[in-house]
Image 1: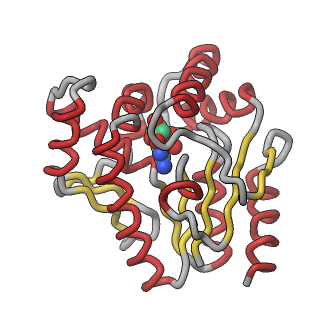
Image 2: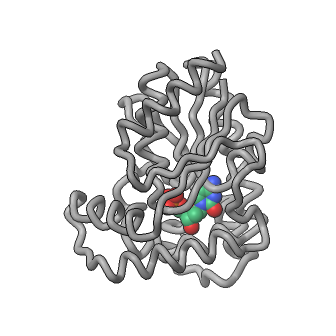
Image 3: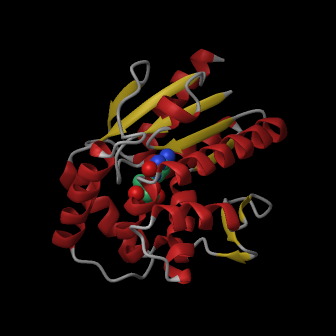
Length: 224
Ligand code: DC
């Protein structure tokens, strides 16, 4: 079973995808992590983020893996675990350069499909979350969700998440960053964030993560 969850930054996709996958006894795939890993690699290599050719070459060259052997999904870039490093605000702010590059997207979409195939074989199902999972990567998914929430609630969630990671954060700046990421995600030419026409839309503004997980779980049970 393939379940997709798309939606804007801070809608709760990662927490919900993880929780739903756990409840169903299947795997989860955070595809934003793959864009973040390429962003980190580009920053480390000192590549001009406007240079799409250099970014595509980099995406071809790097060895990017997702490791599930310790339970949680870990992101391994050229042999090093970068799961924490890809969560900095610098990477969050710069990832849109990578996300708008068509060749990089092709490479990452292929990687995501390959990983999902592997996860399907090993655990029988995958909950894939991102911006284009139901529209581009898995258009034939068994079940599609689109999570959304008000801008302020999403900013507040990101703000708390950053504090819990021990990062410095300013709520107003986080809110501003969420607004510009929304604008960029929705207006880019390739694979912009849109609700798949066949997705179930859930407004999580006034819901806890557990309530959202339970709701999605009920839909998933009904599908099989
Ligand atoms: O969900 P996130 O914040 O970890 O996403 C990181 C970046 O990758 C963000 O710029 C949106 C982009 N992204 C994307 O374009 N397509 C996806 N399927 C997932 C993320």
